[in-house]
Amino acid sequence: MFMRSGLAAAIVLATFSIGHAQDVFTGTVTKENFDPDGLTNPDSSLVQEWVVVNDPELPVRIDASKFFGITLHRTQDRGLAADVVIPLESSRSITAISVHLVFLDLWNEVGRTFDLTEAFDVAPGAEMLTGRWNINSQADAEAMRQLVVYVKQVRTEDGTIMSADMAPVLREIRKIAPNAVEADIRPIQKDQ
Image (cartoon, rainbow, N blue to C red; front, top):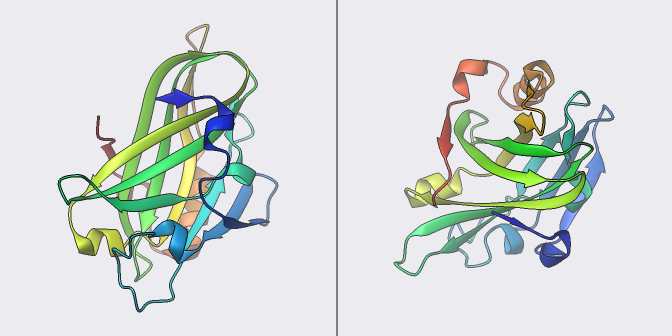
């Protein structure tokens, strides 16, 4: 689902800094914004840390200055869910996109990878991609402390399918989980 960029203006506050390369950005989300309902360990000072990796060869990039990580919350049926808003900038018209969010747990091991795939027609410019996933357990929610997010694939208006170079993505994941391999990143689909 897309919404105009102004709607999600200030969802949460984040600390933002540029990483070692032009297309790698890092930040943190305060506990109050990552977990406003106190669903994970309320006595912990841990915050969510995130890394955005943009492939300069793709016509779409994540605007890291407007990315604020995920937010956990209780659903109406008392379950747990994670929401995300991905601010995108496109230099070409696209008809589909796949963004992957790779979570690493408290022990710096690769956990779950969420796949946010949408088919849509978008002209060059800024858009917001939103997603929600149900979280299976309290333990899964507590393990969502580190996040690497990147555009995995795009389909352009002329039908060209472009995929991200995984080497920079894996390099960033391996800074946290040194033994990680591409096969560790098995995505699950977002909830409808």
